[in-house]
Amino acid sequence: MTMLNALTLFHSLPLAELEVGKQFYWHFGNLELHGQVFLVSWFVIAVLLIASILATRNIQMVPAGTQNVMEYALEFIRDLAKNQIGEKEYRPWVPFIGTLFLFIFVSNWSGALVPWKLIHLPEGELAAPTSDINTTIALALLTSLAYFYAGFSKKGLGYFGNYVQPVSFMLPFKIIEDFTKPLSLSFRLFGNILADELVVGVLVLLVPLFIPLPVMALGLFTSAIQALIFATLAASYIGEAMEDHHGEGHEEH
Amino acid sequence: MMHWTILLAAEAAAEGGKGGLFDIDATLPLMAVQFLILVALLNILFYKPIGKAIDDRDTYIRTNQADAQERLSKAESLAKQYEQELMDSRRQAQALIAEAEADAQKIAAQKLAEAQQEAQVQREQVQRELDQQKQEAMQSLEQQVDALSRQILDKLLVA
Image 1 (cartoon, helix red, strand yellow):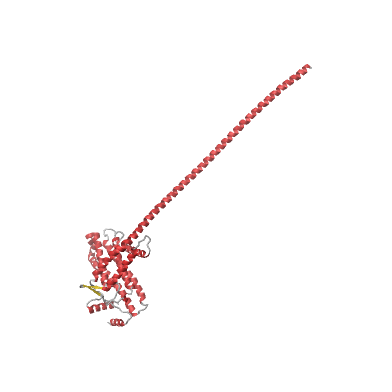
Image 2 (cartoon, one colour):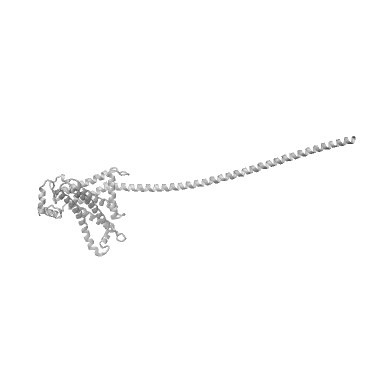
């Protein structure tokens, strides 16, 4: 509790402050929404849409400018999906995995790079949408649905065969896995991004100048890595669900 | 660090009755819906056109490359063919030259032989004429000798 007292002491300083777990509530009927998450996510969505429109406004055979950048991004995503899902079936999954990657990546970096603190909300503060547990759980659950859908659409009810592969006593573990996958996905992302923002916040609180810079750079790195990890794992889960166990298709992920 | 966040989260939750880090509410489903809409929008605005551009370029490059390969092999075969033809015609030319030379030599030899023969014939003719004239001369000389000797004899006999 002394730590808490120290924190409240810092609160009284005008330089910086740290808010954790405070939400800017919006009410729709009897629904409660986290306004700050939606505001920043709309910003992220707008960034992505504008970049897409700029890139595709005037498509040329020899790419230049935005088109070049976005083509690089798309090829990166395609490679990622191809590596995890396989040459034959990756194409329909590129939009989902790619959007996961882009949304998380832009969210994380917007949280780290955009000085949201300059915009004051009545309560809570603007931050990366991925530092809110709701967002990460939503993304993780969508990933779960995606890989179930992938498995069932590829194999029908034969998908349940996956649960007893390669040996039948794997069944309980495989069932547990279905719960741990979204859990680990969502908490990994949430924890990393929130922790990064908190570390930067605390360091800024303690030493407002220069010292937080290396940590911020590290934060940018972790943010990018987390987006990559989330997209790669989602792709690998989807690939795993569609994997053929009859052939030699055993790939270690 | 973890302590702080957990404590703070717990405190926030305790204070307001709501809020905190693990405050799950309607944000979750709405975020999921929003994300799916984003997937659909980006699919139309980004993945399809850019993917099409990339694929088009790939096929363009591939067909062009195949085309170029084909043309290159065609050009190579053409060059080989021309070389072959060149060699053939060179050989033909050489054969022609050799033939012409042989012909010329033959003609020259023939002409030479003919000329020699003609010369021989002429010489023989001239010789024959010469011989004849000599004989005629000898004959007339003999007649004259006869006449003279008869005159001499007459004179002698008369005297």
